[in-house]
Length: 420
Length: 189
Image 1 (cartoon, each protein chain N blue to C red):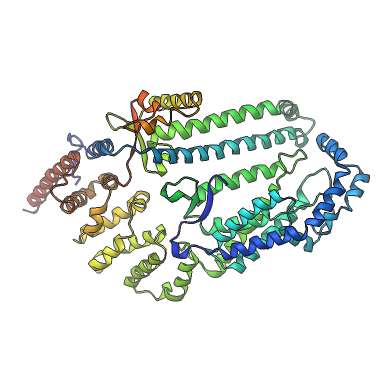
Image 2 (cartoon, each protein chain N blue to C red; image 1 turned 90 degrees about the horizontal axis):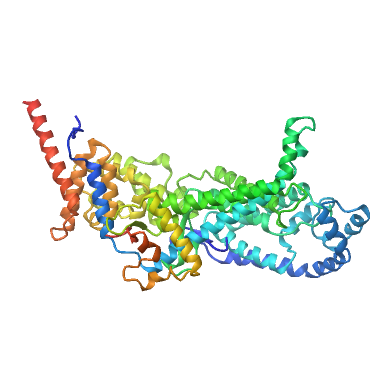
């Protein structure tokens, strides 16, 4: 995750999350570390006296003997953190804010800063804090009970379970959308956008699932608490789904800003058919990266192409950017087809700005169906008219248009013969 | 009635394929910075996958070591599972090797031959094409290209890659050998 750092969901600058919630949570973690520093040092000295014995028994995979266990049951860190045979609810909660070392703390500080920040796009700060605490506590509790270790008095500490709960929340809210990742090179301003669903799953979840299963056996793969991660993540997913269910969050809305607009101004039951189109346009003004709203817009235009004014069509086509057309070609074809059948013109400004690879992609999609060839011919003719006589189409497209023209003439002759 | 009788010479989709190839041929070659960025993304994704396979293999070894505990002691399955346990690390190593090879093959070769580029290149709107015709490379040419890039890059510690910076057509050593090039195809009007 350090190589490709998730910065925020792909949203406009004005609704990108603020920094202050992250700073509050980071401060809490630092405070937790500073207040338990003395306890950590005491605990370290206490355990050091047994280091040789513990290492020997750890290598052989045996559980420690009862005398050593009794000694370890009195270690200082167990006053503030839970272990398998010595835990309670208060210590489970406190353990979310304790870290075993500076490096452990630093890694979780980076994760906390990113995690809280990206969740703020969807839920309020208090909700993030509650999810962090519930998910973190549950993760630590299951890990304490299920981990197979050489001693029952090894404390479980760290904010990782809570961070994974926040990741689970983010995964639910941004599942169908894209995440902006920082990747260290000054290209595209150092960001790339990747689909949350697959990249997140491969990079985080799959690996954690595999490694947490290994934690159930005595041999340790590593010293990371994978069970806490998985349980924390699952808790975050569950809590996020519950939140969405209670709030009746529509699946096509991405951010909290869109949701608030939807709740206040756009109750679907009160729509007239035309005003749905206006609602999608307004929502896209808030978040122009939401492809699902664009699909709704495509659907509205395809259903009622004659009812929309030229200005409304122009406004709608502004959102059909090349990336959207590449990823959602059939719905855009439906729009073009509907406009052609209703004798409406495709906005010339949009046509003039269409990159050539998009033009060919649209043409290839239309060529799959013989019913769309008239539409294809009109589309290419309109494009040719817009780009002007000096910019001639690729010779193959010219030939294509000539071929379709001959076909259409033959079809018209056949139809007129039949009518006669 | 269909507009086209299938005995006719004129084939719509073929003409469009030719138009696309001609367009790709006229597209500009990708500049060094874009190629470097796409390669960086590829390396990051490859590293994540390889590290994941490696960690999974270590977990797999742990599982295989405990297989007999979960089988009845009086069965053929127990004999088999004892064999598995005694060869856990070898089985795990071979599985790991196979998965890594399969990943590298599908990521760098299958993806380029089928889609025109690795995921990193596709993300940046780049395509690996034949330099003369603008067509996609065959599987064989893609394999040779990848092997030449890997071997020459390894032997020269990456220097052969940076030849792109000095080449007028922004082609690397493995591009010149296989008559290929990397074109920027998205956003060209």
